[in-house]
Image (cartoon, rainbow, N blue to C red; front, top):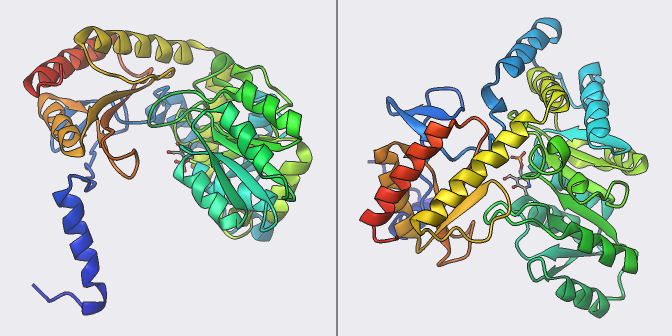
Length: 395
Ligand SMILES: Cc1ncc(COP(=O)(O)O)c(C=O)c1O
């Protein structure tokens, strides 16, 4: 083997340390569409990993819409939208999403991550302050850092602490409260009604990142703002098209002047190309499917209920999720990795998640329920979870 250059030798040491601590990401290679079952290493496995909440990632209507759009518009957007112009398809998607979410306006981004990086620094800067839930997603944390605003973290979902921190931090220019809508590692929901009440009391901008609520919460999957009936009272709603919508992309919904401002000042909008044509067409069809019927959203919640109740009966600790995300709490990362490996051997694909994604000592196997699962899929999965749990002394 060629010797490693001195200047980067530390990288291999760090990787070896991750492996020794059971924190190395082993990425599985999938040779099939993303669906209820996936093919990995030549075997068909039950898929309980994906954020494909509604089974749209391989839905026939979505596939057909993407194929048709390719025939009409090709693939790529050519350049950033302010330079090469914007395709009518992107505008149509943004208008449809705004109407779906009952917001004044909407703008799309390449991903939910990009939507956060675009929005936070466009709204607050060096002289401003952000109040951020301590468990907010990495893309919010990075957006906050990019903004150079002061970041004050408040205890997770703790409204008394939020109010205390606001009272103790009075001397700043603009102020913004940011929270995940659904916390992706625990599946709990932010008390958005209470956050809005605090924000209104102190006249602070509110932003919620509804990545895991989009297509899941609210009437027919209209998201967390709809879930709490807060239309018009949350300034900025971030969403993703990469999870329940089954495609890839991000969105920001809110008042027209905010969305217009992001077209002028959102850096991933100004300096990075737009979503591709098949992505946009697929998302448009996802909006159509969700607007036509609540069937998939209803099935998702029903599946999640059956799975969670089954896990509780088996004796697993599944935390305090209020959504189709079910964290199977295992404690130390090596146990979570061993659990996930044994599930895999028995035919269930469900990933172990450890530090730094979750705190040390709170490693878990995170189960993502989906409308794509049949009742037989869920029964089989529960049986396998029970067997592995008993074998490893977890239940
Ligand atoms: C809260 C939250 N925001 C943003 C993202 C990123 O979304 P995307 O995959 O579209 O970049 C995620 C995805 O994990 C998320 O959970």
